[in-house]
Length: 350
Image 1: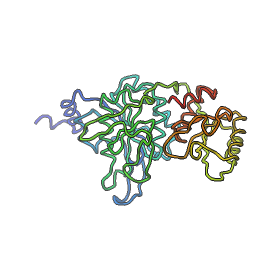
Image 2: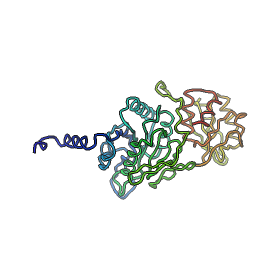
Image 3: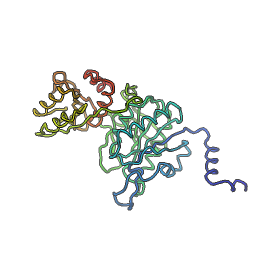
Image 4: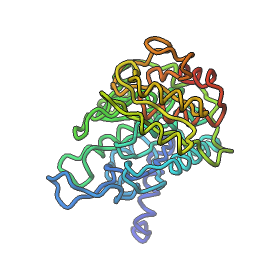
């Protein structure tokens, strides 16, 4: 038959386009991580992250061609412990380009789990529109492992990105069949496949039997922020200080000496600190450093002017943002203003 003389890749392309001419278009932006990891043993935990290109990840879920027209781009190939602000900015730029040019109906980002919550929150604050869904996913087991969770997570994430119900919800994440809000998700387990949760709010929806179902809408995730990075070249430097029983003030004084732009305290309880830290914070504020009180506790919020008089101390309460997310919000906030009251407003709004 004549079609047998055509190259195989062209036959596949023609067949798919003929069968699925009107499917939603989803672009996958690969950054590396465990989902693209490769190990020497299928039964051991050891592996190297970011070895498998995004095209091969797509090829591992052939059933997706019934639901979406999928293409891929490689943004980076790193384990997310090596995620950088520069890669965040590259992702942000590419996502906003896709949205502006309407290249796709949905975007999926494959990402390592170590810092996935930080990337999700950063993008939730900087992506300029939520009319095209942006969904992060990854895996806890490398692609070469027994019962790898990456293909199912990727399949479900594409379904979420392709679903019109996902629009207007801010950045989302899909893990272990749960749809999580990018603002609220945190990593809660170091090794289990159900590694992510939103402890203060719960998942906003689920995916099962290739169906996307939503239960909740987070109004604070769909707010358009002032954080446009298109003209930002250098990000402010914000560091995190972890507090504990009898913690000394040395680290805060070290960062004062480095003239950082901001500090986030991973405080005890409701963002509390001991007397030595309190005095160091006063020195930091006097030096013009913005200081946010967050907490090392995984759930709850740091209450403004409750146990600590923030107005008198000159500090900012993180609300329900953990230290790593508070760092991101303060960093982005400082691209817009150095007014403490305005920065506090950001923490109570976004």
